[in-house]
Length: 288
Figure 1 (cartoon, rainbow, N blue to C red):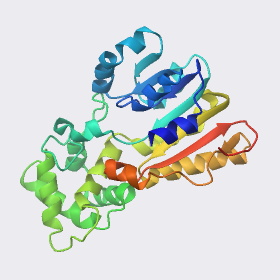
Figure 2: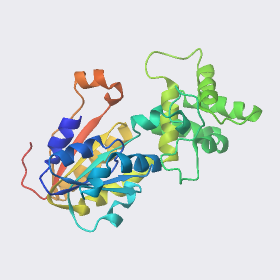
Figure 3: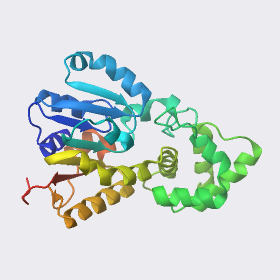
Figure 4: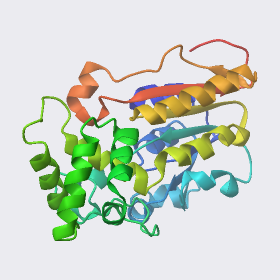
């Protein structure tokens, strides 16, 4: 949804924009092409290291500043108000495809799932420490997994025999537990892995803590744009932006969130659940 993001940000030359989840830097590259300056945040050390090389020219020219930190601390790093902030929530494709990170059940690797390697708790730690009820609640709350209790029972029984430390181990436990119950649709392993990733990185609560105050970092007339891939993420964004409107701090740009076109979903199936919302600070009401 690159075109829609850039349109929603209303990028202006020589203005500064925050890419709160830098990732590959695709959004930031387009912002800079239009003459904007970017402050990019990412709590993934690998992302920062790689992009320091990739965007060496832009950094040297003062067009880009990269910060190795979570967007939760965004306000601590900004010295002045910015013209726009982009939040692209969730995990990026590079992280998913890197087997050593443990984000995907389709790749063999350690049950890590930390976006920031400075975090102390890995997915395997949650699998080892949480009880049946806690695991089931985690799978249901973060992924709406209807077989959460059955999966939790299987995990607790399996860990009595040996530690669960790899993606393959966990995937086999999930599939074996649901051998008779599996139905068409999203694989339960996808949901369980997503729930663990959200818990390890405290993703939803980080959004809840950060988004409400992010408007204070925005100059008048500035735009906040969000892309959510999870129902919980989008619910938080929707409610925060609704509160802002009630408080008359600005307005929602779109009546309903934008979603990917069929063409984009064909090219990038991982984008199928994306929802884009935008908010303008302290401006007369009028949608773009």
